[in-house]
Amino acid sequence: MLQEVVATRYVTPLREGGSLPGIVEADDLGTYVMKFTGAGQGRKTLVAEIICGELGRRLGLRVPELVTIELDPVIGLAEPDQEVQELLKASGGLNLGMDYLPGSFGFDPLAYEVGAAEAGRIVWFDALINNVDRSWRNPNLLVWHGDLWLIDHGATMIWHHNWPGAQASAAKPYNASDHVLAPFGPDIAAAAAELAPLVTEELLTEVAADVPDVWLADEPGFDSADEVRRAYVAPLLARAATVHERITLDAPTATRPSQAPGWLTDRLPPRRKQAAGDDRAAAAARTGEEGGR
Image: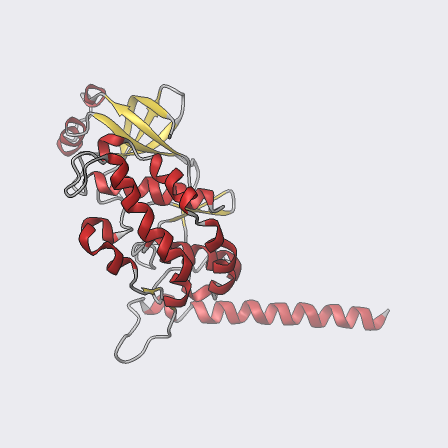
């Protein structure tokens, strides 16, 4: 199970997120980004955050540590924002926290180079969990100490909003054409060969066990929290084996144009060509040096 802490101070809201997450301090002296059960997206967003975040961490991807946070709404009594007050009042009890990464900044595809192997692992992982929220519009990637960190997995596993159609939904392809890392030549085949064998029933069962019972209770069509957990395992297990065959990274066409803005599509290719040219120039220089010895 995830570590459980108690919120001791509400610091400030983060208005970049639609669910109005907030920065809080806790009794373990840690600082966390808290996501609230009382937010409009509901508890399934938090379930997805745990299952996908912990799965990503176990696959070797960088995801900030997750904890559950016990919240007493009285800690926000001094908060002047009425919207925040109402959110805190609606979220008493257990909520989700993500380790706060001080000094991190949002990923900019024009300023940060990503290797094909790392891009492939992230795109394959997003295809596995059907993440529709890592595009150029909203990368949901942070750069911290020079490394990429994956955040915000609440908009994943769309099938858990309609359990009767889960297997059919999970069998659908994944269009990564507008993924923020698509321009970096992600090596999907290598990622699948490396990561797919790691996604076992045992691993997925462990990850699902991290979800608190209270967030799975009273799910329509299920008799127990463990039954809901098993329902999360099945689609991911089946999808891991073959999703790499259904990932599309097609170039834009007249019938399916890219939605990326011109400043991104026009500038990314030259930047990568320049990098390739720099590599060739460096190789030529090395050859010249060796020939002159």
